[in-house]
Amino acid sequence: MKAMTFLTSCLAMGLLVFVLGSLRVSSDTGTGDSFKGPVGLQLYSLRDAFAKDVPGTLAKVRDYGIKYVELAGTYKYTPAEFKEQLDKNGLEAVAGHFPFERVRDEADKVAVEAKALGLKYVGVAWIPHKAPFTEEAARQAAAVFNKSGEALSKQGLKLFYHNHGYEFYPHGSGTLLDLLMSETKPEFLEWEMDVFWTVYPAQDPAALLKKYPNRWTLMHLKDMKKGVQTGSLTGQADVGYDVVLGTGQMDMPAILKAAKEIGVKYYFIEDESPSAATQIPESLKFLEQVKF
Image (cartoon, rainbow, N blue to C red):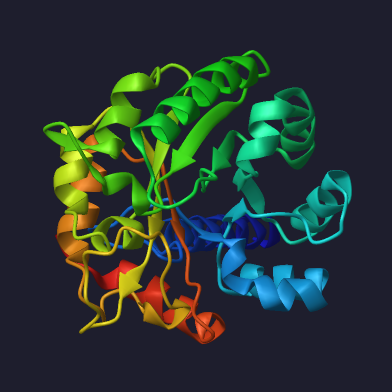
């Protein structure tokens, strides 16, 4: 009888563990019936907090329920030290942004750092230039991306470029972004769409995703305050324009639907506003509830 009771208890406990495990899988933070993610956070969102307290801020990221992160520096920690802090909080650094000049001039050193951090993707978020962005600057950048992307690929890393708004100057029958797409080799350069820096220049993220379905691998999720005028090609904007996902002027369901259809692999919330710490949980809730 005691053996039977013990067996029954074990079976019940096993069932409970299974059910709880299933609940965790089905209720991953930031995902829901429509949006499946995976979703993470671009740590630049909490840059001021990181400048004061790296361990405490990483713990805050963990407490949001986030697993995946994208880096924008290591805040005076060495790559190995920062990786240790990530591991302590159960965070996985998928991608990281590096200065264009470093990717151009020392791709080998960038690769060493990226691998020490456990990254899969090495990214560039800004092409140095004097405004306005020009065809010459675009072609020079494309040559750098092809060369450095090939070097990084030999190290098992993937190079990507993150659009920043100024790429939409007219060129031929399209824009300079179209030129960058045509002049870069898909095997050496992938792309990260920043939806803010697509809408702010008055472009349509969903249409652009569908236009280049095999190039967009990563995405920055942001929303833009209602009433903000679009059409700027400067790549500069007030950080106060960033608002909780689903509360701004972006058609987030259409963007997320298109991203899902073309197979975007990772999504990162990036909130540059002074209220990012309180807005991030609300954006995660939106992603859990959004329908498309």
